[in-house]
Length: 383
Image 1 (cartoon, rainbow, N blue to C red):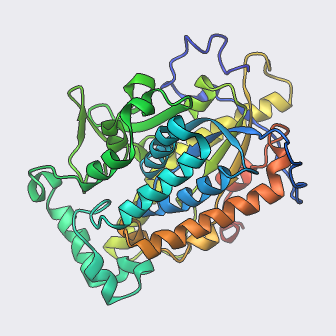
Image 2 (cartoon, rainbow, N blue to C red; image 1 turned 60 degrees about the horizontal axis):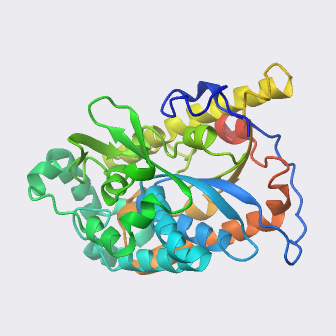
């Protein structure tokens, strides 16, 4: 498979994505025929976004994609909750294939549902009991928590550096299997000192790497690996697409998007402002990569680039912005099992709908219109 540089093994996978591969033209729509019995399963790379408890949506997507009429996975790039999903899937897949991966993801998220502080420094169960769990950010207790996190760092309120998520991962991720799982796995974290992305892969993968990718600096102390501190990978790649361009032969890349690009209305409270700033920050690197991919795609279509040197990506995306819209940003910290299962159901339905409409396009053409989804102004902003 051609890549964006003549020698992909010599290319720096952490370099700028300006030479990224192109994406195929957008599929105008229409239903794909049901796969024939015994038909070969299409092979794809997955790019999994982070978003705390909203990663349960991705759990649902993965559960559906791993079914018999789903897809086979060549490589996964994951960030934050996306990295956790990827690590659990890859570790179990190495032991027992698709069925084991589905079961492991279910066990992991059920365990998260029993661990009140997996994504937050304090249990928010009491806050949930006082109101709508979808909009915990509107409750006074959640606003107090936001003020607390701005006033005190995790080095002050958690000096022993206790992290319940570490214990959860230890119960569900086999580090040896993670490093030799048969899937190409890429986990992105942010270097605190330089502000650049670090992509862990192969022998570098570990539970610490997964924790580094999911380390929100206002909630957890930086995760140190070989003496270097790391924060959440969402700041530099949510998720990073370029490892799939440089280090995977597959041309079909499936993005599972859970972080909203557009939100109506203007944030007015301090919590709303910080939440929206976080979303914008966590989307910035993805938008930049998509802009580079769209640029290369256009040059390939115009025959202005050598297809032997530049990878012609076929991009796809599973999302449900409408279904996720009622879930406020505060719900990303909520590990209530009922909430997680609602998100799981949304993810399964979104993946099932995508497969019904577009499965036959895999290996043939892209179904994601980058300019429409990532580069164009939202409808209410057009003049």
